[in-house]
Length: 325
View 1 (cartoon, one colour):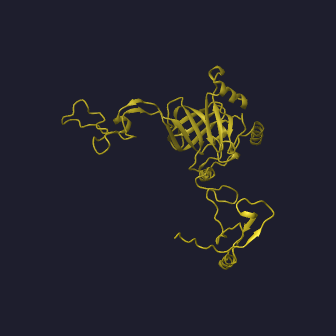
View 2 (cartoon, rainbow, N blue to C red; view 1 turned 30 degrees about the vertical axis):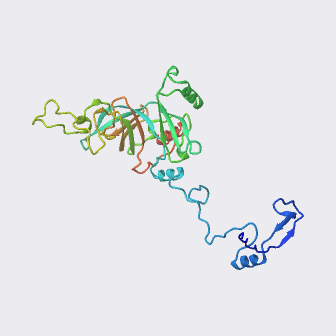
């Protein structure tokens, strides 16, 4: 005998005249039975077509959302700027040329202080970097002069837009906010720094060419005797043959070019400032040979100097001279 088909629960059918129906015969709409309605009502949920579960707890803010009223994400650009806000200088720096070293002698105490002479070569503001357009605040400063025939066309357009002459050297100095942005075309003089304040200097060290492992990294070399012949200053083994992959590890200290790397000297005290000659004399030594470019900016590990964020104008300087006369 063929298997019996289980009987279906009877459902009520009502005719529908609003829209044609192609799934059910006679254009009828199938409704749940009375027992199903009672069971759904007893469980506490609605029998309408749009069903949703109401959360017990309020929704949490998405950590990937960035907007008003939400905490700043640590991995976002705003979070990075907020972490660096305390160590970002309030003012821009300048480009200077290292002229050499000398000494200042104090006749009263008899103390001789070695110092470095830095000269400003007409540093001028070329452009700005804003947070809305570039993601951070910075001032682009140019120094020196360069003939237009030795400048590329894109850079000529860059200088022409700022209405400044072509510069031999360009550098960016980050500032904390828009208050540290100087006007484009403004010339920064030596009185931008004051005597007694501390600055940080950045310059490339003197290049010493190709050097061996003993001079470059301070290796002790091979023994002076006991079978060593003509290889007293050689590097020796550069890696193992088994257990290490039979290769030389990346970053292995070996012979190569020495020097010509950026060196930062922090907390350098300004001993003397000569505005007429554009000289800034700082205490101690600064990395690099004579004639190298040195970046000078307020020290980040010392209190910020209590001076104006923009150089004094000619009228202000004249008023100060009249007041002191």
